[in-house]
Image 1 (cartoon, helix red, strand yellow):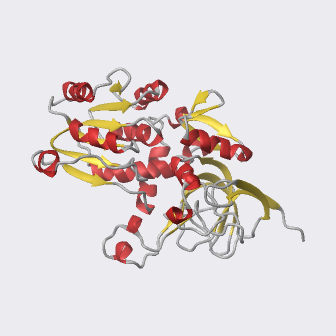
Image 2 (cartoon, one colour):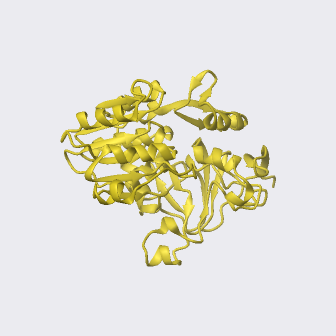
Image 3 (cartoon, one colour):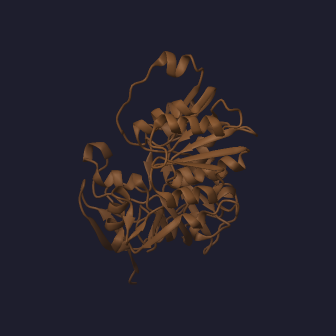
Length: 375
């Protein structure tokens, strides 16, 4: 019997080329799921992985990228009857997957209860030796073979477009749990990329009475920030002086003392430094954006931390709990996720789209907010 084939785009080498191969589509083994991919969001992390040296990635090439994945069940292995939280699962159901797989045995998984710090984790989206079977181990292809026994699969009750936001929404949920926003709070969201825009929407749902969004120069994203629920926006082109921006935040905070919570989603050290000026005394700063090393800045433990009595916490990645909590959010019509999708590209256009995401942010003459591969 001739097996049918599917395409998968593999990164051949560090800083190398993407090669699309045709591979036999596996019949799922017991406990496994074959997912037909509908959409996969293009994440800045994929760009950084593409351009990083081999030692920074720590995987044996070629690797298969793509982790913001939406698709349907194409086939179920023996014994698979439900998703992670026990809902019946059938062929044709739309699903999302938590790309990170934790070992459930290390200190961080068992004692510290922070599995996102697992010391023996794997990820659909940076799977090593993707030239070997089962090949389909990342979101940039026709299929994803969900074969690890610790995989987290969740049935989605919403569209393919909204389901493709499940992974970034889980990132936001993690940061929101750290932020502990209270009803009536003033929240500053630094940055209006996809994570920042989702954070704005979630901050309003969490009870923030006033959300102030900041952006550098992309006015389309600031318009989207308003659509997501921001009450005020700050464009650095209009207020180029950091002191002016700080004064604006204080004047527009409900308490006139600064933001109760500041969430930084910008991947730069200066942006995080500016957050420390926005937050009120005894407020909270949550750092999400500096997922890769963007450098350092001067910091005074006395005046910047102790005297202000602020709480600072880094929110790294996500885990199963955050995906479960994100499910109702991606289906909530009060968060207009579809407005964030500015580009859909074919699998063959992935390198060009990734280069644009990591470059000037413009693809086909339009500024990117969220680009997705539609195989």
